[in-house]
Length: 393
Image 1 (cartoon, rainbow, N blue to C red):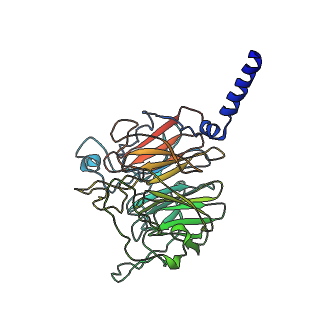
Image 2 (tube, rainbow, N blue to C red):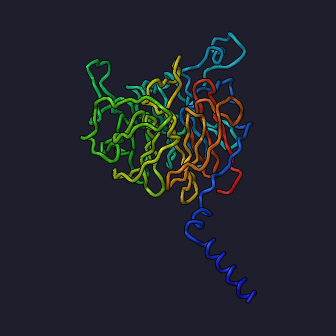
Image 3 (cartoon, one colour):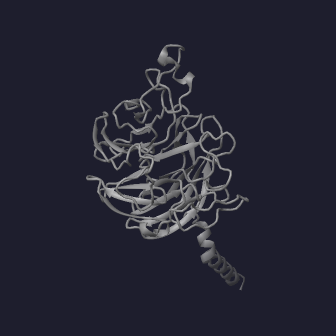
């Protein structure tokens, strides 16, 4: 009888451990772990100064890292060598390519490089055919396509009328509009996705012709309001619900399973759509942080109020299922690690600071095919960092 009782006890124990609730607990995603490589990249050559890294793109052909070295806010001591006044640095090119070891391979661009050179650089993307796409957010900036050695081959255009004080942009315009600086390429469908105001608009990658667009929760362009969205007083809770996409929209990414991710810094939110604009899901990132539409939120150099909002940039993991989404949060100075399918936050790394592995206004993030993460910072830190995975993904 004692033997039978033991068998029954083991059977009950196995049954309990196999119960649906406990089984699901053992399958909770475990966040990957990264460590910073403090010696990457190598110093830039020719006394070039490192400036604001607003965008990072990974070359699918060779895993090289392209980054924006935006010099619009260079301090005098960072470019004093231009006038040979100090033994330091000079203004370097604004588009730089690094190999995996951190050596400069190509470098070009900057004010006056071409007449159409963007004045508010934001995005750089390397496509699978060997071209480099660069854009800025100023009204007369656009999306430009270059060869790797910096020869302009195509200008997207769609600039608004120049020096026209009567021009007023709205969310229904598709012929021309102001900010084209945050975009993504969909080479599968030969399309360009651009986030602008409270919408995403899609254009032909070859001709630049408008194809379609939508707003928050998949609403048609015609239904997007052009009235100001309400602000709110932050009380330690998430922002109030809003059906529209809430500016500033900070990223658009497309996953392998053809989902479109739109980041709303004004709402601490990511909305997910199909490529034809059907709303799929939404999730929040550090929702109790003041979003950008909260009252008393500042900008890059605001003298009184801190920055707000959490969804600055997104990098999707490179495993076949793209299990993880990495969100750069320039307000909390963290990288949040999300389970991509559920949108749940499963981990984070980083904190405010100037040491290796810390962040001060992180504004860019990208992952190469080997699982290395690259981050870029603006304001005063002005650097690119490399984080190497130390656990299996």
